[in-house]
Image (cartoon, rainbow, N blue to C red; front, side, top):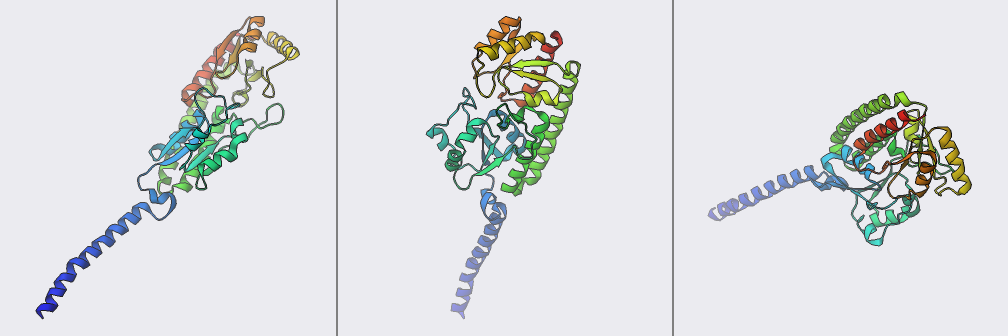
Length: 301
């Protein structure tokens, strides 16, 4: 009996240990939640985007649960950039890539997907967005410059994050709601600022602002056409059209030569002003663009 009692006493701590271990394992399983993104616990999702404005959107929707990086280097052009092998290697271990269909993505999409690996989700943020076409027939990718189209992008981002990380779906949906409220307020402010100049024409070197112009009843006269700088005949035509519309400013952007813009500006007595479609702080930049255009068009025809 003494022997039996000792065995019984020996079993109780072991049984208790196993029971406690089972509870802890169950708790850990609940926190992780099975497989895929649910196994992360408190680890943040790794997201990549092509350009800085896309990062702004993902950060606003993803909040504290997502760590977002930009593939395009600061001084590079989305039209000319080709990722280096070292830059592509940084995609390893990425959970999701939010594409927007800029030119370099079209040309190296397979390499980006391969670098991200089989587990990286590829999300087309332009799906469900009403897109137009550039001269030459290619889709116009500049949807991030239209606040109204950005709301559709943000909904796609929130849906993708919720599928990948369902544990935080409520947070993503709440972040989306707050972001859409800010976009609506921004849209209303820009509408109010540009309403007095509705119907007027502005000139831009790169045809990035078609959607913005469409949203706010403006007309854009681009210098570049089909991804090419204008020849002599096209340049003369643009100068004549600019003179007829009393263009007071020619808008250029970083990463592109402004030689032709300066030639046109000198001919028509306009100034050359910068507008950056890739600015990191998207909302601040949209307000800046609206103010610059309003000031230019109020003083023009």
